[in-house]
Image (cartoon, rainbow, N blue to C red; front, side, top):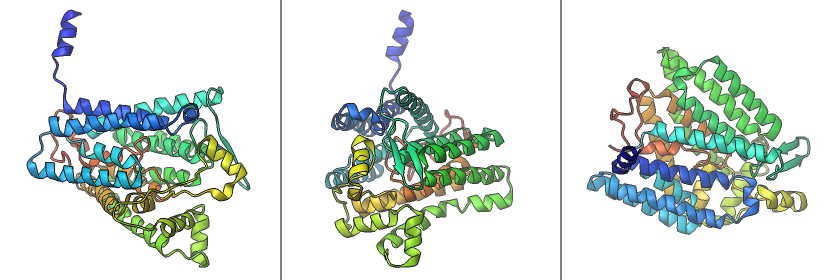
Length: 403
């Protein structure tokens, strides 16, 4: 026993260990803030605690990572952009996620997703059980012509569906080599349950897209030329959808029949995004935007008493522009494209599919920067590898950003 303790004490701490500890702690806090446990305490202390993880990752960057001067200057500049946007927007999410992105050097991305999947799955199952036995609130929303929508311990039904969707994406990424028809059946069943329980139509569609994309990607893995050609175009979804989303919002006309139909299809998201731009405008570093959503106990009360107050920017790309600013929008979209293009070149089809579905989901959901939903931005600087080189002890040629 003594020798074991000595061995543990004498084992050197690695940068990857520091990162995974910080990531896990931040993930736990971030996930907790999406649940109705927050009815019992203020979220401000949790936000302050999240800065401990940020500080730990920054410590890793400057003490454990071995960046050259040029790379260190780039990372410092990126962190400075995040700090400026954080202070302007007063949203801590941008600081959290950008620090995790640039701090992921030397960290195997698959291990990050493993920890994300395990922690998120355990917490989601626990939250659902606690809500069903009455320990925490199971918020329900009665919507005309849509029935009753349940959140099962999460602050809003669509957030519940998004948690399930991102767990499906993570599972498909981790088990890509083993994916067969049983996986598709389970994913389709989960998509059906999302529709029945939360009536989350858009997340349900994203889950179906995930299944279709996985089928094509598996054919590409089997060297089917038609499938390889299709998968090689998946990365284009990011610039195309971001461009279409922003152009549609900036040119939104409430009297145009095409815009009316699109707005109805996306549950009034176009109108709300257009309203946000008209009210707050756009600039380089973002704005402090005050939103009134229907999530949580206060939101549920507002939905039943004063639903006209509702104002929320659902599209992640419009959020980036209005809340975090043009600089952050360009930076995050560039990271997304870099991940997708690099994964395409390396034939890492699992990551290509993951980024495609994340891109589509974030067109209509706000979870791009929220680590409790989306860990895939962290692949920008992290170590990724193709399936043929998946030995964690071997250094991949794709270890991080601009290496």
